[in-house]
Length: 421
Ligand SMILES: *Cc1c(COP(=O)(O)O)cnc(C)c1O
Image (cartoon, rainbow, N blue to C red; front, side, top):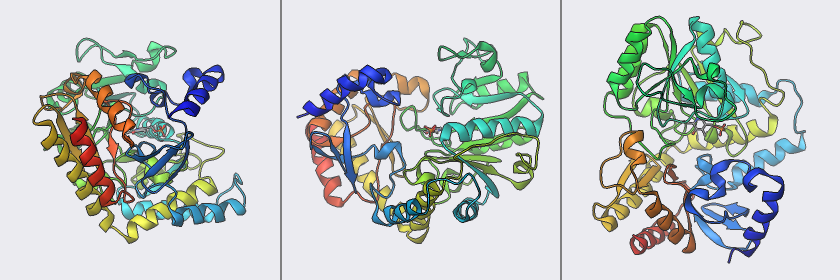
């Protein structure tokens, strides 16, 4: 059933560390062999052995329209024929920046890069350049890509400095990263009062989706808005997942809280590598070549990637009913899980993002998320996979629903979930 995937994985391990180009793909957390994917269309993904599965990973978020959407493929194909990269400005970059500003009014100006990691790294440099301050606050359990300064573990107390969470990151690089607790206002207040004029920015996933889906408590995001204003720090929303996912205007529209800077990725590239950072004109005008904050990229604003991103956003804009449709389908899944599990799991949902935590208590932060029973998740994952349902191979990732998931897909998935739980 997965003979070819197993062969490919053995071969991959010879030349690629762990056989994968991004760690979570290795299925280590669930003790299985990763499926090597041959193709995907709509809601279905097909592996190298020919198994077709209903896909709820959606490439970790970009696939809001489903795989290989004909309208997107057409624009990408057209773009390819005109050349893959020029290292010079192109029309679609202007159109994409303009459309982003229209859909997310806080992003008056934006800069295209090639990944979410790069977008966040650049936004933080900009926040430091703008405020002339060095320290930033991030939240335990929020993921912002793999740049040095963001791979931190919290120290033992809120006031001790954080320590690197990866080998190869000098302690000096994480000294300026302070770690607060998600949904815990007091932990943020404490850091600000200990460092009143030294914090450049607070960066947050407005809906945390990298410790599983964890919703912001009512008032938490507006509290962050107020306290950053009070201390002259910038508020950065890392909307790499939530941007164009929770609504056309992202989490900032969904929760009515406006950040100073926003980072995007995933859906913004429509399946191609794109990251974006942007915000108020006055801040963005500090970026090179007109300002002193240096940032550059050989392939940034790539013509093929911008074709995919632009067409994806245009489709979403022309059919905003997508958001109600995918939210309804996700609610249907959430209800089915709750019904079948009878209180033995915690289901967190925001829009088309869903997590099933194997925990009887509510999950509101990193501590409660990591209290989940990952062995039970692994068993659940394996049973779904064997029945043709492809969900994230880790308890601490979201399930993504796309516009391509049909009602029949959802009903089938609900049946399987009932059986499995
Ligand atoms: C995926 C993700 C990133 C990193 O994006 P890459 O394109 O993987 O570098 C950053 N922030 C959040 C919230 C993400 O989900």
